[in-house]
Length: 207
Image (cartoon, rainbow, N blue to C red; front, top):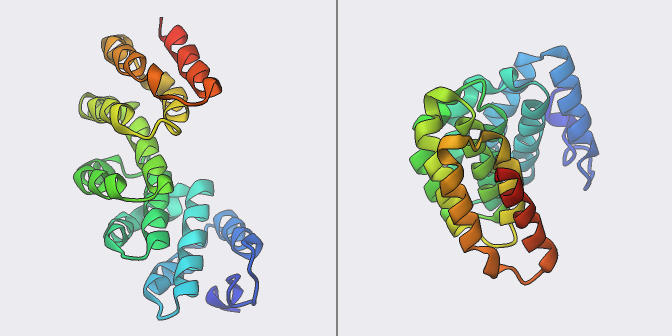
């Protein structure tokens, strides 16, 4: 069976289980040929096939990022897609390979930021996750951390608690005061008290 014949859509399935099982198998077997076939079919004439290929690729990336790291340029190209699912799927894939390819990811930040600004919640979530990972790498932290702070200032209030919690490990002494100021300035933005309390807990941990 070809990789494409094992996709959920090829099997007449509407759930993601076949895609997840295929990704797990590809990662376990370090099957580079299967990955190459999936990348090639990201431009398949069938939208469902394209979507499933992207899904399997970022699921592979979550399990074994080195297998898809060499395709960073291809994923970056799909950020321009008019198909929202391909766009956020590409951002998700890039998020899985930051530590494999930090220099390529960092170079693409202007494009990633522009896409995240206009894209879906999932697109922004993955962009912020990328910034958090880059902020934890000394060579990129000095530029990534201010960009992360900008996201904290401008992101929807619903997303802020999660972003703040996830960013905690990379906010060091030099940047603490800036983040404290940013998060404090947004405490009045929450409709739900539970979300405000989560940010207050982050502020307490920042001291």
